[in-house]
Length: 459
Ligand code: ARG
Image (cartoon, rainbow, N blue to C red; front, side, top):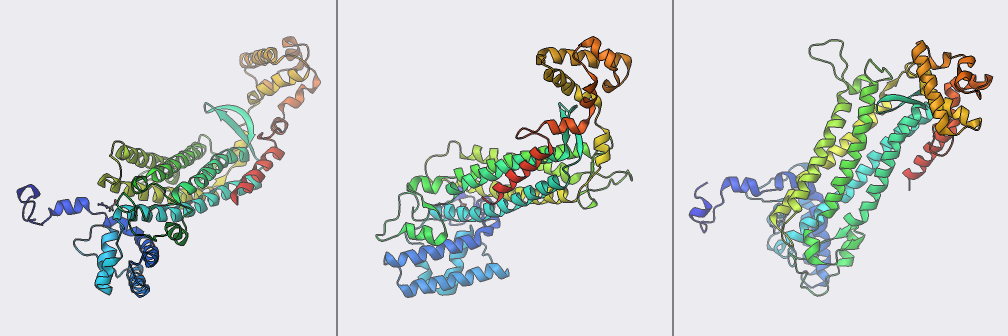
């Protein structure tokens, strides 16, 4: 670095720290393929405007193909003053095919170019994310089918509440993820809007530029219809970051359940070695690091979303360099969500469950609601039966016996409607089977959830 900018701003030299601060090639190079696809489509469209002859177009398209090859084989050499993927590709194109390369950028700006590249990139990454999400949902649903006969305590406030099927719990998480799948699909039309042909802000000045044709060639569903908005709209990124955040929250909550259930205190599940780590000092430890990272990384993704939203607030219309700050959060969130989905899939497909321990954790007091409902079936209003059942619980506590060990005589003293058949209340399987309305934990209702979830995967 020779001179400070403010010491001689016409010297033409840039503070090396400023170059490093300003450049985005180090991370936006991952969009090399999209940048080249966009340029090819733009060259094709500029034959009709008369900017390029068919022969010049061919030269440019061929040259761009070579630049792409270099990226692909890892032979592309960045120059010291390449600023971003757009300037790097154009600089290299000129080295390869000469001055005709200088015609490519006619009427185009990096403003409509970068917005196009990011959207193209995200269309592909959203599709990859969808695939990983579907894999995860499939694994959960498959387990739920196979393990449908295992019962466990269901918890509210982390206190034993009512018996449920293990599969019912699994599917509660799959149901969250099914909403995420539908949300992801919903936002695709808003990602798939073409900015190219907007110029720096005011639109493309060359007659005959067919933006619909560009959109079609690149696979965009629609064309951005206000050039000022098109070059500055980053809402599609915010939406994707929100989607990632919410999906991570769901993964995190699921991870939290499994962390708790894998403690010795619960002992319901055990992670496979592939997704656990040991302690450097305590030999007995098997730590659920995979689940803890799933939980921890949800905070990171939310941070990327909130960070970008802060960047977007208060910038004036059209392109401002602040917008370059959209990419790192997006790239990081995409990598994090895709890895997290795959790790969650791995964890769930390989973990062991201990159905005997789950069942052993079921206690008769968890049927206090069923006891009240027994009396409801004898025609007594629920508010009354709730009270009777509560007295039964208190009596069993006083007697230090199980709720199910109270004698018929004792129960009858609390309410004369109790009869011999109260015995049936204590059957855990029957309690679960009674919850047979849509969405319940009976076997039929649970298997139906599997069907409903699977039906949405292909949609
Ligand atoms: N690297 C820039 C970005 O990511 C490209 C657009 C630059 N445009 C400009 N007018 N300086 O946003």
